[in-house]
Length: 318
Image (cartoon, rainbow, N blue to C red):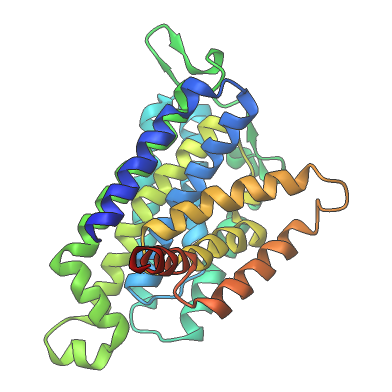
């Protein structure tokens, strides 16, 4: 990450931190919160896909597991929502370890098939265990966050906004440190040339297991926060539409860029919400996102962030 990118990211963070002060509309804050959650999931998916080269479709399963962990712990066991959110990261990491062991030595389409099947298995478990998970109807009226006598539900999403922004910021910082560490360099070696990496003493299977587990922790926590914020847990979180939307954020933003999926998540969340309010575009919005993804990948395979980087470099030269 270059010095200019760090300055740009810091400016963006400051501007986002100031948004609730100037934007009092509850709906706009809500869209930002959802964007922060999606961005957290997307940037962690980018770690396994962009840095580890592991094209897995089970990443949204980790998100869904975090959602139902928080929902079940708060409704069935009366656990504090704060602890339930953190527990979502633990259960997601355990599930990632479970699926990573058979996936570690697979290649190509087989990784996609196994991880996609894992996500569908999680959905079937949720649907079949209705007494605990609520089945197809899900779990509703989850407890809201509070600090002492301060109730987040009464502040027009002010508190939830900063929790979402804090989760995203912490996740990005951790992933940037991981990307710059020896572990991150070994992941890029495994991604670019697994045979050469193995010849240099890097265990390809071990690195794949580790990258799935590391990327699942914040994803599970984001899922727990999603459930507590919306106060509902629904099987739709395991759906294909959510997975394709988040994957679009990764691909449009830029695979292996960390910051790219964050800005793509913000842009696409607001764009899809705007199109949902336009008559005739409610269903077509996903087609628009797909077309945008094709165009970006056609023009700049490394993502939209590379396009802006080229424009900035061109203006700097001129």
